[in-house]
Image (tube, rainbow, N blue to C red; front, side):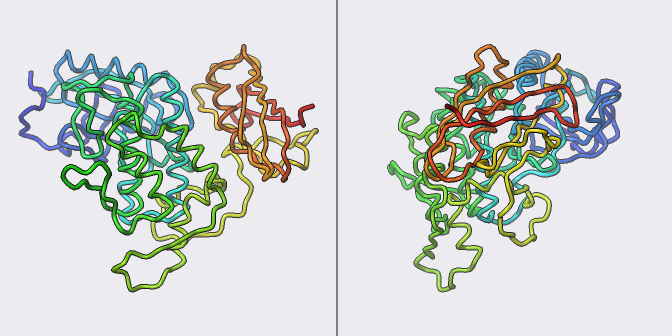
Amino acid sequence: MATGAKRAWTWQEWENHCVDGKFPLLKHLGGSERSAVFLTERPGAEPRKAAIKIIPADPNTAEAYLSRWSESASLFHPHLIQLFEMGSTTLGNVSCAYVVMEYADEDLSQVGRPLAAAEVTEMLDATLKGLSYLHEQGLAHGHLKTSNILAVADQLKLSSDTIRPAGEWRKDLDTRELVDPPEIATSGAIPAGDVWSLGVTLVNAATMQAPSWDPGAANPKLPENLPAALRAPVSSCLRKDPGQRWTVEELEAFLRRNAGARPVFQPPPSSTKSATPRNLLVAGAIGLLVASAAILPRFLRNSSAPEQPVAVPVRSAVEAPARQNPVPRAVVNEVLPDVPAKARNTIRGKVTVRIRADVDANGNVVDVKNESRESSRFFGNLALQAARRWKFTPGPSQWILRFEFVRDPKNPVSVQAKAAR
């Protein structure tokens, strides 16, 4: 049976076919020589609208893909695409593996212009949160690039179909790409490799160019129009020795330390144009980190939309109902976790998570600790991620945030905050 190694067809020819008698291939959305993504519908399931990825593969290779996807389907994080169904099938005489996943409106590679400051900040913030979750689980993304950073409604998410155990790289499943770190073929996909790919992706997103290396050089040659505020973290991501690269945690710490920094723009030597407001904003991407969660991924919905000032409180996409005991006035910005429907449906009764948050003199949360040792690790991570984004009135303090998760789809989470004694 053919596996697509030598093709006499195009992906578009499969439109209107049906996979496993369940998933119609409604429209070809994109892909590569090796795989294709189609719009589909899930019969009798929500969300009904979905995407399906199809990869020609012999039965043994298909089984390996299904093993990876099955593990990834058990992951729940607001910045990861959710995988739903998967299997193997034939289309015509072509043997394939397929996975049905959350539908994304667009991906970062489709923007067609350098990202503005707020957009770079939100992309980086969401990406670091997703990578941090994966690395804590002993996993690696393995294929981070602009086309694998996607917008789902008002949320930025990383693709999930390439996730694998840290250290794994298989010739029958994985291909080399320009974003891959130099050690990928010998060390496999490792957290430090994801950091390398993040550095390349940041350069691509901010400049629409790629970093390069002069022969024998230890450090990359970065585009002249890369904002000054990004040069330090990018250079630290692109060290050839994986052990010398910054970790995701070090990148997050760097961003927190530089939050609020004044924008600085230095035009390249050959530039004769004056600094525009947009240039100033791009160079100040790091300084906008605190406000990033309030910005919708509008670069994926309207690439020509002008930037608007960010001056609204950070909130979850799912608002909690009015409380009889509102949070203290010392809380400036309150963030509620986004709870995936699949995770919410596993709740029986109520899941309570108690988080202790340390606040610095500027009112920023600098450290969080889950004090509910018996609580679900997944919901504990959701609460920790939300707590890191709270903002308080200036003055060092310590707070106890009590998150309660329930099955109610309209109000899945509530929170109470009180000063620690």
